Amino acid sequence: MMSSTSLPPSPEQCLVVGFGGICLDDLAVLPALPVPGDTTHCRSVEVQGIGEAANALTCLARLGVRARLISKIADDIPGKRILAELTAEGVDTSFLVVAKDGQTPSSFVMVDQSTRARSSIFTPAFLVMEPADISQMNLKSALEGARFVYFDARHTDTAIVIAQEAAGQNMPILLHAEKKRPELVDLLQLSDYAVCSAEFPQAWTDAPSMPSALISMLLEFPKLKFATVTLGEHGCLMLERSSDAENSLMGEEDADSLLHSLEQKKDDRVATPMCIPSEVVKLKANGIGTLTGRLFVCTAERIPPSELVDTTVAGDAFIGAILYALCMNMTPENMLPFAATVAAAACKGSGARTGLPYRTDPCLAPYLDEPAIL
Figure 1 (tube, rainbow, N blue to C red):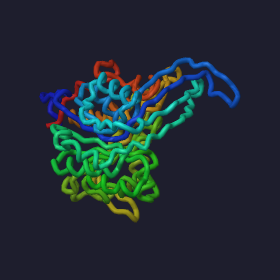
Figure 2: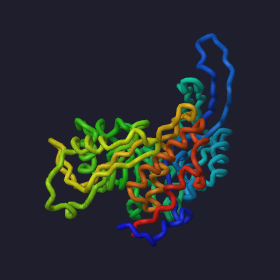
Figure 3: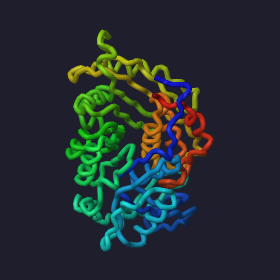
Figure 4: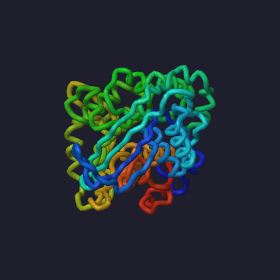
């Protein structure tokens, strides 16, 4: 229930711990990608850290939430640059493992300024965060005080060790489910929230439609409170679990039909993100089962072509904003447009982090004064 007198928690009171891979990008913006034998001149060159968890935590830090990263770098120049950049952003790096040998992963990225097409040359470092690395740190200390724990599904064996500790301490877990891999089943079983790529739900479940795939996921993983699917310029879709007791006398509603009816309510004249929620209903997916819950459709911000620079970090910014919204007890109706707005802001800068907004950004003002739920 919404209270008009309650105030949201202060962001500084919240700590999110993230675990995942990390990399350093050399980003060159070119008038056009060169063809073999040609020479072209850079319009700009930037060196930026990248990595899904590191990007999401940087987003959180800019929004005022305390963020801590568990990852692994080498004791080399790219590793030191990554460490310095994260520290400057306010991300707690005290639990980064620094290998004395090896090489920090890096990429050389070329961006076509006119088409925004990207070509990358990735230098893998085979620098994998192993469970043995975790045994060398005090994992309880690394997780101490965490309001949420986030995994980008990299280094899965080690992620499971951390997730088991977090779950044992009743710390809610959010997982980014991007590609179907059998080893993700253990992380999904431990997760309270999932943010999925557009391909993941149906690839994981073999369901014939997105709504039926989300129902299948929430039935397979009873700990999941919601699963959200990012759809790029088409916005996002979310299924939130509700208590069966809330609608014990309600009839069933076909999930695909419900999604169609929600999508009919979109207003293409509105450039800002809008969330269209269903009522709590018993959702039916033929051949899969039923689930009591709410379905949400949220549009993306319509970014003018002149302002659209780079969509690289949109997904990570979206996840960072979802984690912020969870920390601040936002309703889904507020959380999803907020996350879409943060993702859109990130697309207006080049590279992984330039466009990530700060809490003081005027575009976020409509969302940050909402009261918390008691």
